[in-house]
Length: 216
Image (cartoon, rainbow, N blue to C red):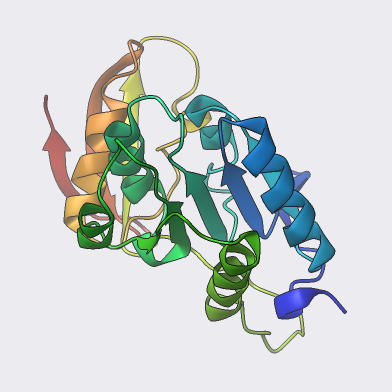
């Protein structure tokens, strides 16, 4: 039996299927990354590791969001920017942050709504905190008995006009955002793409209702 009742989560998107891990771990240094990953796997969790923020972001797309994101700030470039962007892509309560000297303070991490794990700390304590976080967002079973993935946003969506390509290929498009402020922050990230010409916020209804255009 896998920990946290987290057996095999799959999600279908455009006819394809993607495996959704329990935890995505971002750690730039190989030793803590290897130790934390090994212990999490030993506890029965499915873990995907990344050593850079752009690589982690690939695993935070709407159809692939993990239940929990675990970020080690040690050696991480521009940690404040990473945490700010992460707060838009994941619910803060689904994120654990392992602190490091010379980076963002635990108090600031907590103010952002994340769970701060302060060094020095034993690997077992990190794993225990991650396990508790996974269980706290474990999905319920529907009438059909299938598991439904915990969504990290609920009320708003983004749409974008692009110069080329398809808007749905962008990470922020298609995600659901639980507050209008989070949607606006995601729109700010979306506007950084050089192919994006404008961004619209709509409600997450069928059909969606227009909320506002976002200009930066």
